[in-house]
View 1 (cartoon, rainbow, N blue to C red):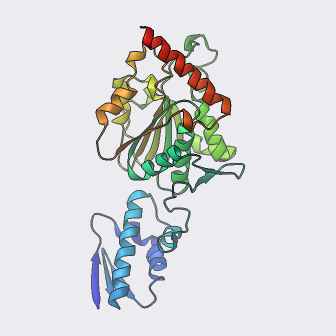
View 2 (view 1 turned 180 degrees about the vertical axis):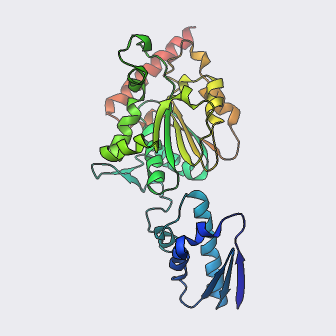
View 3 (view 1 turned 60 degrees about the horizontal axis):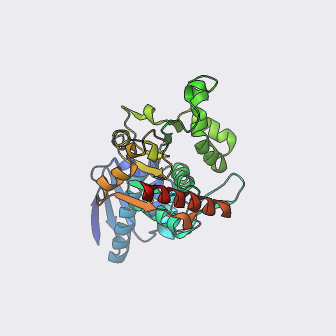
Length: 317
């Protein structure tokens, strides 16, 4: 039996690899099938069952190329064995290994929901109280994607909103003034990427950490972009950020509506933005609660105590 597969809307070298290396590796799983590559056409000759299997697996390879910058032999292996590092992890699987060698994986059901949502959507809102691991899990997913070459860069951003101290009174230049706001992002990255490698990534722009205002006018493609502390953005700022989304990009927005540092709490655009976008395909919202807190056990009690105080204050107004 003969069959011709035609590649459409994609350069054959992106699938075949340099010197047909990827295609040769792929065809090694079909020893009884004759495969001839002619430009954007693959001519198959062999048993009907082998051709059908080849067609299914090859479609998976093309789909993987759409989600990654470059294919490797490991991608081919993973398609046939499901055991490679580039496969989509199950909800409780290891996302990445930390610099201390310890595996980083979901620690509760809601974190598992976040992982699942990441692979099924391009924009994810993760909202809930402090200590639930929203940002940490988002950065772990971004680091995994970078290591697997599914993205070209990681961009992490926060609104530089004053929370007790004023920027103008902090010592140093602009970078020195802004770094305290961005330190939690540095901390998470340093848990997952060795220090020297992290410095290299930041020096060449592979990993960028910047205040939200620096996002204006940019188009962010082939990237995983994380907006942290989104409760401190107004609706206009949130719209500005979301409309930066370029091709092959993943956007994750994290925030806690109970920790708004804006002069007026009602100016926060996080919950309003979620409500506006609810129901749109490709957008998911994961809601964390105090039951999902993974820090010190006292953090849960502290958060609940402050929530009760806020609820009591609201009822008296």
